Length: 351
Ligand code: NAI
Ligand code: MG
Image 1 (cartoon, rainbow, N blue to C red):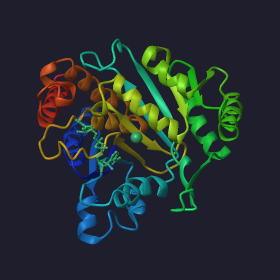
Image 2: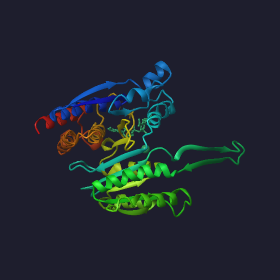
Image 3: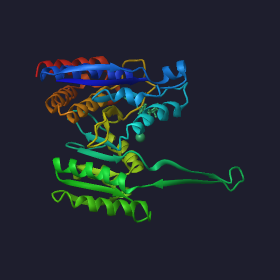
Image 4: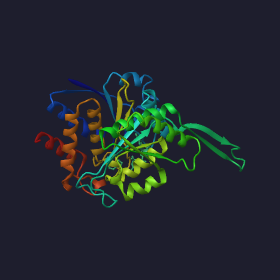
């Protein structure tokens, strides 16, 4: 079988971590008797400076020819933020209607963390990816009058909640059967109570999954104090965004955090990307941690049904991380991106 992959390396460390990842995916697939076919797109900051747009108008149509998209990161100091964040990554997610964002967090043995006692942490945040507080509804009234009023309206639709909830229950059913819904229904009166109600209704289709509802502030504390009590979390766009950066710390930080943007049950390619950005402070030095991107690639293989190849990638990453000589600077080591990549490949070849 041939896996057709669209690759968007992007800016800064994006191309560095993607270059470290593609060969690991290829090697893992070939070990299982499959092939990888890559189409690479030069979308991002440089293209914006050259042509005035970060990606072509028919970008979604182009990537739809692929089975999945591997995305690095975008962002550069000399290009306005919204041209790349909205003009590319959020724009593409919207064009493909990728309703759900999956953010697994797993503490690998041997990886140091700033939080104590994270052994065995293994959780997934399922984040609604299209609405909530991030719809851009609102405005500033009485601007400049001294009585300026910023109004930001959150929108929560039954349809979006249901899509995310089905994904979360199904995932919890394949894992420990425990789902934690994160809301704030004591202080907010309309949107989050709707979440509580709709998610409970969806849960009736998944009797084997135990649902608990946790307020977001309590969840933040619990994530640090008792992270092993968590398995699958379901959260709105805003809460999922905040909690997933917090959760990433449990695994060693941004260099360790993969993600997937998917539309369950539909025939559109998912976008798999490290959670981190283009990291201009370390770009060009060859020292970025490629693990977040590699683990995003493993999620991609899993979702395409190539679970054996995905396991090869994850096992090789785990084995590589046991040795501190393969830790990049963000983990307190001094390995380069290329050294991590060749250690992972080497481990895979000797598996
Ligand atoms: P960032 O994630 O790029 O960097 C935050 C910090 O984490 C930096 O100190 C960086 O060196 C470090 N870091 C991130 N990834 C790392 C890795 N793989 N290995 C080692 N260290 C790593 O976030 P920041 O600085 O807020 O944003 C930089 C640019 O990236 C901005 O232009 C922003 O808009 C963009 N960005 C893009 C995203 C995307 O493409 N999906 C997501 C987040 C930010
Ligand atoms: Mg974020």
